Length: 281
Image 1 (cartoon, rainbow, N blue to C red):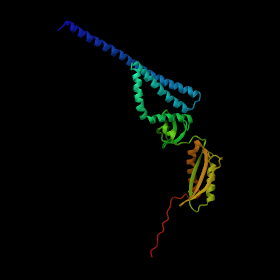
Image 2 (image 1 turned 90 degrees about the horizontal axis):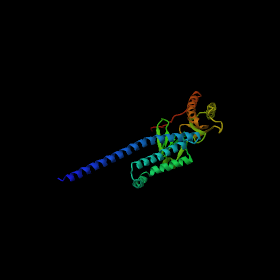
Image 3 (image 1 turned 135 degrees about the horizontal axis):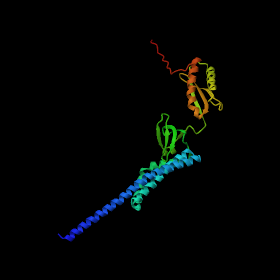
């Protein structure tokens, strides 16, 4: 074997190993730098969100706007952070953009609902059908609005469950906002037995309503005979209260009517059916 040829082979292997080592060291250094940048970037993004929250709160911005902007800032800055990491790793930007463009078309079709939710979030922010702290009913759910995110709205139900409702559905369907007005009307229908003195029953209800100072005098409480039902004479009661007092007054009225009607001998009937038997010839 030719000694010169062996020397050339050894030299080629050594050069290849040196090149591989240099590439590994170079890539390892870049990878380590990217890891450091990622964690520092995430910390910085959190700091920026806290800073924006403080600045907007001091200027008394609507909490709904603050929540939405924080969500938007998080997404935009995270995207910028990932692009920076890609550049440091040396991935060709044009190739990366081409891949993103190709993937974007497919993802755009698959994520049409997500884009709709983003647009819905913008509409909610502009027209403000509800705000943080409002009690709403929508999409078969009801609860207190806790956060308005870029793609969904977070509500807390009465039994302390957290529900996320997509903004797209909220912006294009019916929303009932129970806190939009300062006052609410309570409607109650109370049935009494046939033969009950209606004027006495009406007077008793008036006394119950007057005893509760949470019931507003204006508009005037309304009491009327609503229906002559199959088993009862139904009396309609309508009163206005401040929105925060709604449920407390509602439950208290039911309790007081039941107790005082019983004391005054006013019967509240239960469903009845009279059966007539035909006699035998």
